[in-house]
Structure formats: structure tokens, C-alpha cells
Length: 281
Ligand SMILES: O=c1[nH]c(=O)c2[nH]c(=O)[nH]c2[nH]1
Image (cartoon, rainbow, N blue to C red):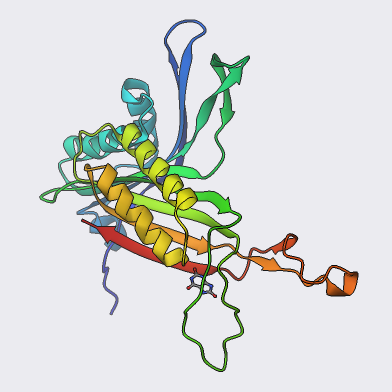
């Protein structure tokens, strides 16, 4: 016999662009893509023909558009919180809502050294996102982060002293290229924080640790980034970091008359090392 173990539903990839017109030519913009999932006493729609509790996913999409019109400014995380609070307040039969907002980040163009009032360039290094989970009777969860943020340094990284067995071929090194496609998510304990400032401080901390600290392993650098982020931003309680080791392989050009060379490397996509950890206070 089949049993409905769990269920949720909603609308994914709801896109919206808000132009905040301070005057005719001075604007701010915020472009988002939203996933919204609803939880509650919705088994009827799966187990029978009873759709009476189902808020149509089309209504979910319209809600995102209307809330964007009424409330969206430039802070993605505040908007995730607004969406979460709205669904619980409006629909008493819903038990919870999960929201993910992904941002296409537009930065002002710099023209003759001055920020342009209404021309923007895509800040394309990674996809910033925010997530909210609001469930009745539980503390709200609010987080933000970034995926696919590509950083690289050409020295001040090594890897040595690891476990060696008959299958080990990796030579130890104290000088290698270190590149990673950083994915990070940090959870706010203070839900009235200046989320944008917190995001900037955490990314700046990650860059600073990465650039200025010798890395004996991706693992160590990952932990140090988490440690400094928690130290600098009291409003977060937890940070999850994923740092794939995007390898640049040494190339043997001896047969081409360049023995022992170390400046031309082979960029690779796969396979890659995958280093992940969660760091809490
Ligand atoms: O920083 C590293 N951590 C590892 O776990 C590892 N494994 C590996 O082959 N190279 C590296 N580098």
C-alpha cells in the first residue's frame, strides 16, 4: 500500500526586475529569480480530487510580483523575509514556506571615473542568493550566500605531509596555483541586520584570507575563511563553505625543449577535489 510521506509545492524560477526611480535618470535596480515552496495540510490534493487548500502556483507567482512592486528595494535577503512572512500571515492553513532568491547583480558602470546613474554592468563572478524558511512554531531561518565565485592565486599555496600509500603519485609541493569556485552560505541570527553590509564583509573576509595567508591545504584555508567571517560579522551563527580544488596541472614540455618549466600549466575542469565544511560559533 502506498503512503504519502511528505509533500510541498510552489512556483520556481519566478523572475522579476525592479527599477527604483529616485528621479527621471537616477535609478537603482534589483533583478531576482525566486523559488517558493509551500507546506501544509495539502494531502487532499494528492490523495483525492480536493484542491480546496491549494493556493495555485500561479497565485504564488503573482504574489512575488506584487510584493516586489510594493516592498522590494535593493536588499534580496530582506525581500526573502517579506515573502516568507506574507505567506504565513495570509494563509492560515499553511504550515510553512521556503524561499530561495537568486540575484543577477548589476553594478553601476564607471564612466570617466564616476558611477553612472542608470547604466549598469553585470557583476558576473558568481550568483548571490538568499534563502528563508518560515514554519509556524519554529524560529525563522534566514541565510544568504554565493555560488560559483571563482578566485585564484598563483603562489602561496602548497600541499604536503598527506597520507602516502602504494597508490600515491601526487608529489608534495609548497608552491602551486590555488583556484576555487567558492560556494558559501551564512545563516543570520539577527534578522534585522544590514544584510547587504554583512554579505560584503563576509566576501571581503574571504578574499583577504585567501590572498594574504599561505595555504597548506584547501581545508585549512576554508576553515580560516569561516573563522574570520564569524569573527567579523556577529549577526551570523553558521557558515557553510564548499571549495572545489580547481586543478591547474604541471605540463612536461621537456620533449619540446623546455625541461623543468613551471610557468605554463593546463587548466582542468574535472575531476576536481571537493572540500566542504560547516563552521559554527
Ligand atoms: O588542498 C588540498 N587538499 C586535499 O585534500 C588534496 N588532495 C589532493 O590530491 N590535493 C589536495 N589539495
